[in-house]
View 1 (spheres, one colour):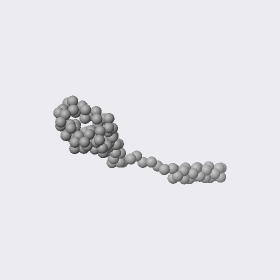
View 2 (cartoon, one colour):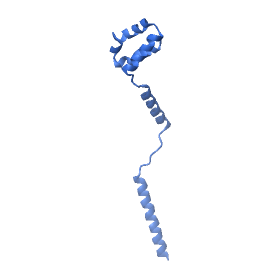
View 3 (cartoon, helix red, strand yellow):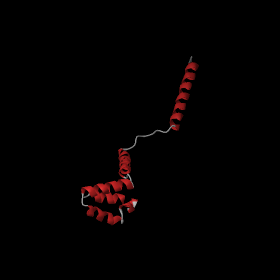
View 4 (cartoon, helix red, strand yellow):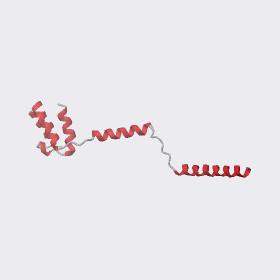
Length: 103
């Protein structure tokens, strides 16, 4: 009877040791800290804001501005960036549109 109990205890201890070894092998993932979550959200918002404008969008915005405002004022703003609207560089689209929208 005592031998049976010792054998059962040995089996239980062996199972516990195996479980402990398995738990040490698996990675425990921790939840991100609130600061990390805020940084990820800010990065995603920045990506959304950084949507690049197409030439067609810039032309459409300029055309609408010509209709809504003084043509000469729009021409003056275009002149800051290029001789003709279609010659404005992609790198200047955002600044150009901001100026037009500020009218």
